[in-house]
Every structure is written in structure tokens, then in C-alpha cells.
Length: 459
Image (cartoon, rainbow, N blue to C red; front, side, top):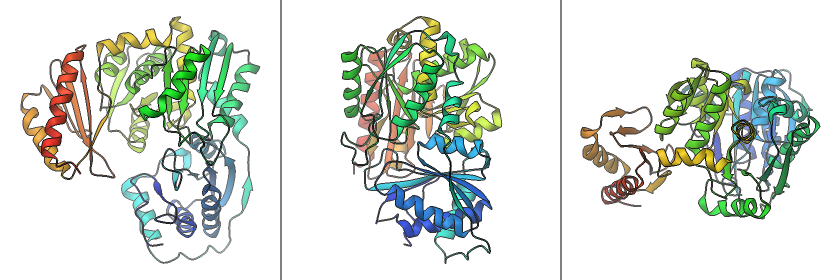
């Protein structure tokens, strides 16, 4: 297969039999060995029907490059991140397509220390090698062994909270038939053994390659009522829903209302700063008013970052940020190798609810009223560049602050807007927020949306 369109900036994601197959996966494994010069690598996989085949092909390629492969089996992406550092491996590869359609798959990769591969160097070199002739086999082939790192992983997750300070709480968890269920059970067992007064309601808990309840992607509004309805029906204090490889975690309060990503970022920042005053918090700039205020009030230092896991992880490492968050439900933790986790956030929010003695809805309500936001609005366009130019021409001159850190962010006395391009498709992504003015928010969303549609030639 010479089609290399599955190669993205920071990972690999493609359609099985179209731009990703076992032959390409074997070449990726062999190229990974070459680019990183590694001797050991961890490999894990999600529940998708194609994952065992892709995982086996990767292993063959790695072995051909002289790499000893440690297979940790059916896991979440963060378990590969954990195992890579925990086992002292030189690299890690996770076979997953997360929330993509069932006929897709992909590979997320890290180097030694769970560091992401660089886009302009390592990923580019990997793609280049996969597009060329087969690399020769190493003089001594690598081996394959198996390891179970889940117990140590669960210990790491529960270390993020003081279990003795937790209060009784019922939590509804929706694994979406992805791989979150078994990993969650290991964490829940640790909590129970330590006397944590938490009880859990489970739904769609068993991994199922057919995804009988649909591909798990709680970011989509149409997928949220299933979790919200069960929260209300069971009287849970919080609902948690994960995507397929559970590197993203979505929360809803006891009323069934999903909590917008920027408010989860603020709550986690507040939690860390209560213990580590003065620490640096990395946040993406698509929506920023609330995060900046909460971080400042809690005595922290706000460090803005472009969105994207590799960029945020790199900035966290260089700034020694204790926590980083994106509105897209990715949350990064210094004490988790600067990697993202979908299990740490809900546990830390449960601890914050205990310390503040408030329901989640109350904790969010004040922030939501102070800084209402639009949520990310996507526009599929024939000419996104024309729409971007029209937007800048119309609004930039009157802005009190302008940033091109991630797309174009414009700030005004009472509102703020970010417009950015997708990295992979002709789509513009719009976020608008205001200082406590819902009517102004609705007005600006309608106004800017109309401008984008009029000038961008909808596809």
C-alpha cells in the first residue's frame, strides 16, 4: 500500500483496506524501530475488529527491526503511555481509532518517557520510510512477550486523590462498549479496598467490537442523552462517559446537564492549585475567559497553548506545567508523564465535590453564568480561506487584543472569539464567549456564522 494519507500530524488514522492495512502496519513497525532506534516497545490495542491484525503486523515489523515487543493486550491509550514509562521501554504504540467509524483504525505512538513524536521530524521521517522500499531486517530479530500492567496503572490513578477525604457519592459511568470498562473496574477495586465511600452504576460496560450502542463519542450532542437519562434515573451525583480508547472523559452533573470542556479545565486547575499554589496551568486558547480568571484567583500561572496533544505536552514539559486542559476533553497531568488521561479527571472532580461540599451543578453554574460560550461550531466550506479573510477584515481592527497562537483569537471588552482551521479537512471551527451576556453571545454567533457562510462557499 503506497497511500500514506493515514499519516496525520501526530498519529496515524485510516480506513481499513483503503489507506491502512496489515502490510502498511508492518512497515510502520519497522520504520518506528528505525526512527527511534529503540530496543524495547510496548504495544496495546482497543476492541475494534481489526485491532488484533494491525497489532500483530506492527509487532512483526518491530521484531524485524530488532525490537523486543511487550504486549499489554486490550487496554486504553493512557495505559500504553503508563506502561512505556513504568516498564522503562524505548517507545509505545497503541492501536486505536478512538471514536472514528468501525471500519477505521489507527496508531498512537510515544517515545521513551512517554514523549510524543515530533510532527516535523520523527513523524515526517516515519512517513518517508513507509513510502520507500522495505527496510532490511536487523541482524538479530526482536522478541515478543506479554505483561499485565493494569494493577500498577490503577495504583497510579488513585494516587491523584486523598481517598480518606472523599465523601459518599454515586457515580454513573458509561464506557460505551469501548475498552474503559475493565480498566475502570481495576480502579474501582482499588478505591473500594482503600475504603472510598463511592458507589458506581455501570452502563454499556463490556468491551464489544460490534459497538451495539454506537461508536462511543460523547462529544456529539446526540450521544449525550443516554448518559444523562441514566444519571437522573439512578439518582447519581455525576455521570462519566468515555470515548472508545478513554483518553477523553466527559462529565454531566446530577441534573443530566453535560459540563462544557472549559469548565472542567477550570475545576481541575482549581483543584491542583489548592495543593500547589503558584503552579503553571496550560490551557488551550479556543475558550479562555473562565480559565484565566479561575487560574488567577487560585494563585496560578496561566500558560496559553495551541490545541493538540503533542503541542500541549511539549509546552507542559518545557514550562513544567502541573496540569494542562483542552475544551475537547483532553486533560494532561505532569505526574502522569505529562500525558492525557480520561480516568484521572472524574476522580479529581469527585474529590473536589467532597472538599467544597457542593453538587457539580452548583460548582459549574456560577462559571457558566459569568462566561457563557457557544461550544465549537464547525463550518464545512468550499473556500475556508475566503471566510477567514472576511472574518479578519470585519472584526480585527476593533479588537483590544489579537492572538495568532491557534488560528485567530480576537478579544473585545465584553466578548471574545476564536476562528481556526481544521488540520485535516476544509472546515472552520468557531468559538465565541462573552462576559456574562447570553444575548450578546447569541448575537455574535449568528452574525459571525452568517458572515462565514456568505463568504466561504459552503461545500
